[in-house]
Length: 225
Figure 1: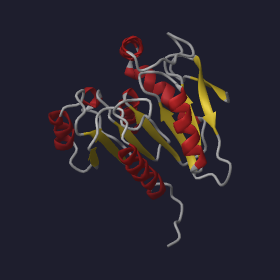
Figure 2: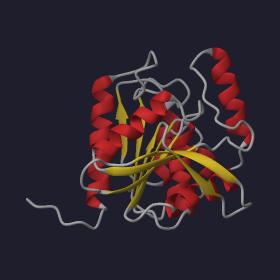
Figure 3: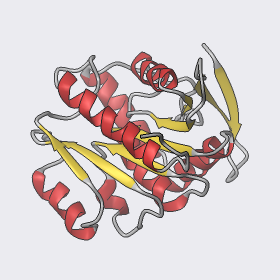
Figure 4: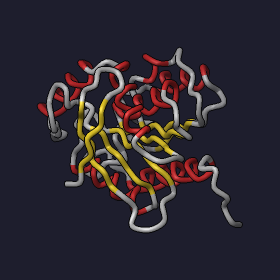
């Protein structure tokens, strides 16, 4: 597995990251942020997919301080372990690790995150430097960071039938930031993952298209008509 070693500017901790490079012309760098389940096969496949679209992708292992190389399944035990690790990982630490990943890539650099990573993608847009745009998928904990304002363009993706993110939560985010595009799909939580019962391929494709369009619009590169 292609890996990188990154160093946090906060505490000097060295952590690992999955690295996927484009085969053809490079469109930019991309920090891909894991779900609570760690850098799983699904996360690596997403990284490979974005690399195929022209992005150099880094998917950091944010739990390495507590559980090096952590990756678990979607069963109740895996959910419990992943959730516990996510709650033990402070946002200040996550922001520094995100900055290390951004700094390891040549610009333009973007971020995309799923589940816990969706909230971290919001965090990156608010706190990190060197980021051009961010795309956040079903970030349940964004309300914890709602007083922090994104400094770069960001779009949000939610599932209409997600029991963990009720409509009033999505509405509150929209009321706080009416200029931020919020896309709501006929889907539940984790609709991008084909490992989950809530997988919705049409919603996943549309959300990915919107994400890639966001990156293109904010790449600083001229797009031919």
